[in-house]
Image 1 (cartoon, rainbow, N blue to C red):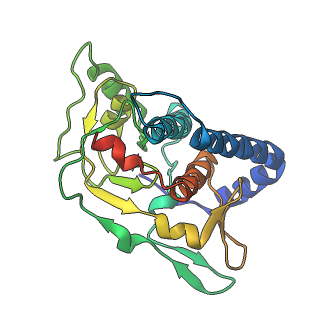
Image 2 (tube, rainbow, N blue to C red):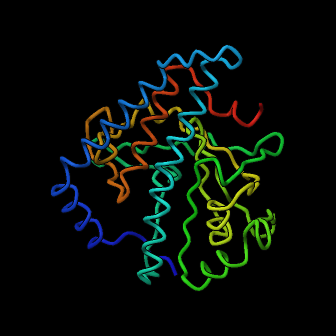
Length: 251
């Protein structure tokens, strides 16, 4: 059902990157600037440490960006583009640099959580690659606090990956029910895997338009939704400021 990115799609993306370059760069700089402001902001809350309020704000900012990605995915469904394939660059097994013949991988940093993580789809950053309009209609209609609350089913909701340090959950199965949960309330999900991409920041950077190999400045991947790159670079700021979004799950 899902087709991998074709040459035609890549050519189309390259065209968009050139046409909207200025727009992409301005948006990227604005989000990064805002993120930096959050991380240095003094909330002056005597009852709550600044670092906790900072990661709470950053988590919401990343969720805003993930919702933009989700809306884009849904728009493809509404347009009956069943061949559309959302490819999360952050969960790719590896990225290959053809300039210096280097394979870059962080797959060895994936593991199962020691204990279940209660992850609320309705308040945390999530991407669920739904693909079928009829299934989406059924999920939106049948799942909800007014009818039947979202219920995690380990036989259907599996292969999900929680990416750290950005606290972004990529759904691996049960796409349509999970999509409905994103727009519901108190939709608890239990990620099957955790993937730490911290090592990527030593070798890969996003410049507002595409991901590059930092060693030789070679283009590795240009995503349709630039928000995924912005989220990635916010993760770099989290590491630099020694902030951990995982703390939101152990409060």
